[in-house]
Length: 159
Image 1 (tube, rainbow, N blue to C red):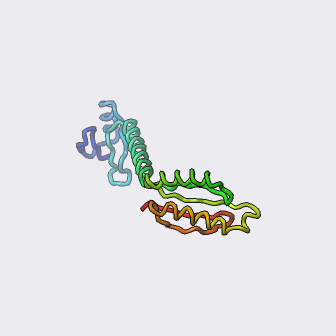
Image 2 (cartoon, rainbow, N blue to C red):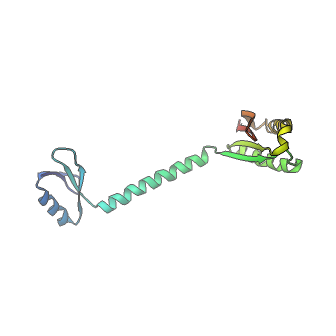
Image 3 (tube, one colour):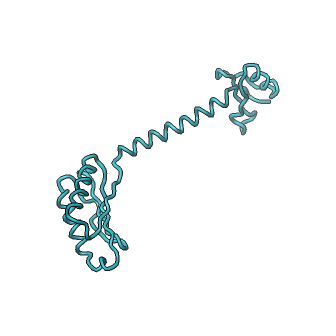
């Protein structure tokens, strides 16, 4: 015995399982158990393949919308440097940072140190301070320059 709901969402009532299966075959659809724990179990006449397809589609659409929101939420852009980065290269990297900040993205400058460069961390701090000053009209410092292992990071957010 099952409680049957037909293809147009009307409650048929409590009928025998074989009879419910016959009604589903009659209309060319599937008999799907929707609430197995209730007493009696609830079954629905529906196209199960179509239902599965629609569920997958909903998940896919939700995922697309989530990615679209992430793109416009101001993602984190990283710009990598070294202590010996040349003035011209630094100007180009600053131009990129300027564009990112104008688009509303956060910008993280990461400076990598190798070997003996670790002795001259003050050059790194000076370079990151120079970057902060040149971008202060567009950005504010969210996390000031600090060392973590062999890298120094600075995080800027748009004003």
